[in-house]
Length: 560
Image 1 (spheres, helix red, strand yellow):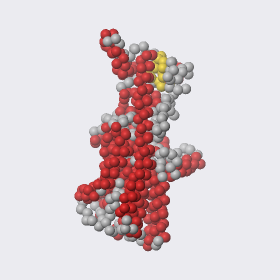
Image 2 (cartoon, one colour; image 1 turned 180 degrees about the vertical axis):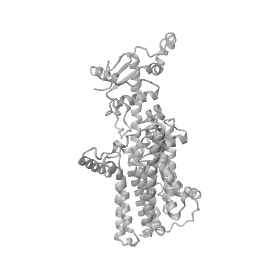
Image 3 (cartoon, rainbow, N blue to C red; image 1 turned 45 degrees about the vertical axis):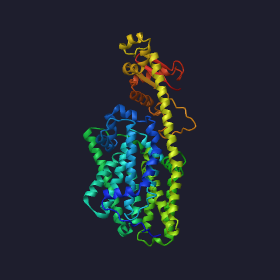
């Protein structure tokens, strides 16, 4: 199948003029993106709930960011500093994330439009990639981490800009373009490690698009283009790593073990690692849980069938066509490079390359299908509109409904957590015999019939609780209704998180309380040992005696 050339409308030169023209001619796609963005994240915007790690970021502030520097996320900290967001504002972060998601959606639309050549543009399908990507469950899970949601969306924008500048350098030269591309690529990598495989996937996808649509420009130098793409990526990664080590040295921050602990090679039996990777690939490709859907499988089958169909139809007479098939295999395998390197499955929010490949591959397949349809039928435009409507329905059913069930579940859990927190703090006040109440309010309490004492329970906890240590034993799990589902973090409670870490749940809950204005101390080793002994004879919450006080230590037993 020859590349279609019947979309020949003059395009303005320059990226500013070109982007403006692109937006004018893609208003329908932009409207669809805005609609789907509201449908995906609207619930998050209007029903605020705390996410895991948000509480630690609010309480620890710069100490939390030092931990990010220790794991090479200094780009994320720089973005926070640059935008004045070092003091996290939950809720506002979600607003910024949605606005930035719209921004990177336009940027990736424009990049894919540009890489195809300015005389080739299908306005009815340009929305497919961004919508499929930002509505994927891994992106929703990641965006729920409000401590980094805006910054990660901004890194996705940086990724698109870096690739655009890189391809401009490859096709037209210009050392300044290369330097800017490397700078933005390093900033992107240093914001979140998951963008390293995303950049690989994006480079491979852009190569296939350029090979298909710009054969006259790269057809005879595909190997040189490949070497340049690989060299820029390696340069970005090496500079990112080197800068991270320099910053850790200057800031006197020790290297974190968060990412090192993910590596399983040499720490687990070989057969165990291979089995876990096989199960992971099987689950993701065949969509065997709520985190994955069949868009990747559709893209993989479609791209491979398209490639081999051309081979059968003698269209492989183009130079280096077998090499393009090899690149297609690399693109489809790229989401699994990092799991193979680690020897372990990725956390869901860290697997961004899979929805990227699924989204990019789906858009490529549907475009090629419509190109063939327009050549074979006079009703090509109607077929295109029908295909767009069908895709809209599938994305709504498969992605957006699932996203909103997860966000709704998280909101219900947060409401249950708030109610539980109020009851626990009241019980602490009761077992403390009112000792935590501010002395200055005693006269008012008597004069007002005790109403002031009740109204100042939060102040009592905040003021008097500063000297009191609270040990929380066991866990509490939320009650789920039929519409609720639990994701990796969405739909889970602070009161059940970090159960495998000794005292982990207690630290999470006390940080969460601190954000709400209830300040209590974490128990030291001696107090924790005393709490565990005391808890052996205590009933579980909410029975009488599930909250007791011994001196400056309060023990709460949530479960057996």
